[in-house]
Length: 76
Image 1: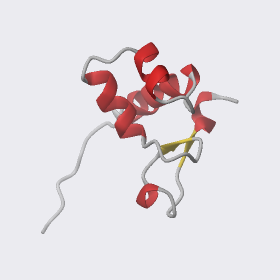
Image 2 (image 1 turned 45 degrees about the vertical axis):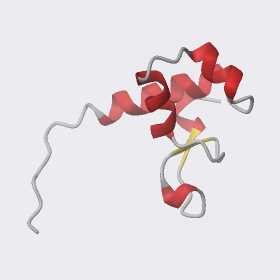
Image 3 (image 1 turned 30 degrees about the vertical axis):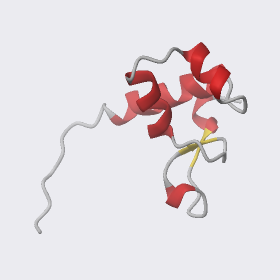
Image 4 (image 1 turned 90 degrees about the horizontal axis):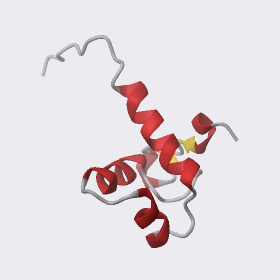
């Protein structure tokens, strides 16, 4: 399975947020755990459903999002 295929979006799971393999682990949660200082090994110990490739997929997803050329303000 390619890393990009590990990220799924389903309106019935976590309100349509990008998640890991259709599980209820949003990508943002994985990124928050990593940014809090947890290691991949610690995350994998705490969440037995996850695999190392899932963590890499979350990081890859975040990297792609950061490659946006510019953000346009919206009128409210």
